[in-house]
Length: 395
Image 1 (cartoon, rainbow, N blue to C red):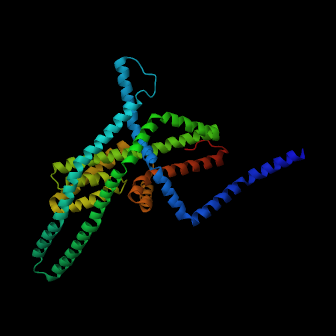
Image 2 (cartoon, rainbow, N blue to C red):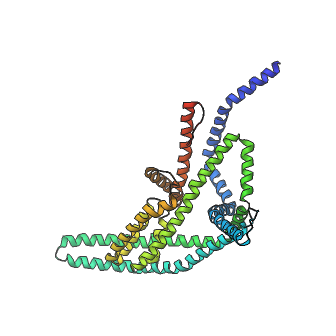
């Protein structure tokens, strides 16, 4: 009897001190991780490089899943209408839907590359040769207008020298370096064909077996968590998927439409550097809030150097296009997928951009939206628990 009581007492002491043990263990792990940070980072990078094909496949599968579901539903409905008989198997049309999705995406990428790259190269070389001449032309006009005023002539002359130094530095260092980065990136992609192929195969298997993976995940949650906790975790995962997946896919579609509309509008207005401008506007539009301005400012300067009138026309056109995107197209596609106020959107962009550059600016908003949702959910849980002693409404 005494031994049983002793066992119960030790068990109570162990469970009572378990939080302190966990905190101490975490503190020790953090302490050693801090002093061996470089080694940990190198090992993580090594593991990520090994698993890169799998990561690529998972990303492909996640992005392609909505399109696969649409094609699968279309094929199923068409088959049912034609044969007057419903197919019982849930995955009967999965493989054709996956193949059509991959073919369609590959064809779009090939079409864009074959159309855009030659025009893009032509636009960039045209800018390199045209910008210095256009700047010199405007400089000569200004100097002719101010020939009677030596003070203003000196100011214009100094400003011209500064502008030319900046442009030459930008063309040689910034523009060429960015082009070289893109070219190196393309060559690295070509050199990593095996990773892409393995990633595509992985994506196909993941999409074919997504119900199996979902069932296995559900079994793991059921084994380790209570029914209530299990339900909460599944609800959180659905909300995270809605926020992150909805934002990424919606923003990509929105930016593609804006890029196409910019190309059509710039072509009709007979503006210069149509392909380059449209690509810059479309790509930078992926970045929330600041993206339209990041893309519009350099494009406006380039067109203004070619023709002040066309530059002003482009500025008016891009303002109309961004108003259409911000008030009509964007809300229609994205809806309220992130649920953040403008302040937190700016905060997420600045923080993400500072930590991870352009990629951080793109994924910073949905990532912060997920964190914001989890924190808000926990706060409501604590408030409701304080009021009622149990959770009544976490949202």
